[in-house]
Length: 225
Image (cartoon, rainbow, N blue to C red):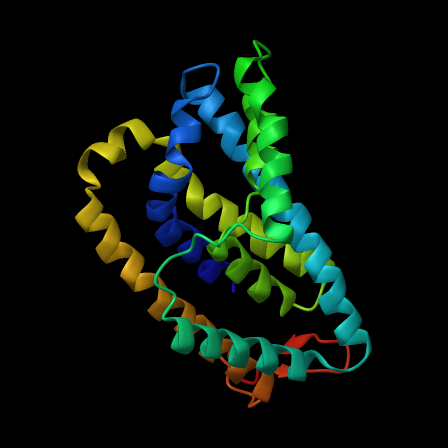
């Protein structure tokens, strides 16, 4: 499923141009190396979040519930996509999300004034905590991986998928017009629906190689040839 994480991150990164682009352009130091540090920071946070949800998923595997977990995650994703149409990935900042946003924003402010070489890294780490519907969709899928390593790896590939566009922001922002970004963003719900269907098929344990491989009691995949 690593390919789906990378594509989810890549497609979603066109949305990131509007949401995170101003942060990249406001980095205290310019140059590719500083953008790279920023993106490494975001990816580190995504991996840590993936590790956390992976721990929950691993608990489900130990309880013999990986099939149910995979099917459940897929069904919930489809329900969310159908009823919300996933028109955008910005979440309303109220309640807990507002507190997270305010806390992160407060900690980010002094970093933008810092002269430290590693300031962009810490900006990226904190930026990874900002409320984002696309990140939560990726975490939801990472949960179904059923292991700490699987969850962290899924979010690693998600983070890597966002890097090409964010790293070349100054170049890509010139031709990625709002109209093009809107069209690309419209592709994401269909892609997420495909991932959800694959998760459901995976949970059904049909023995179809690479689509619905058989899972043993420990959650290991076995491909019937």
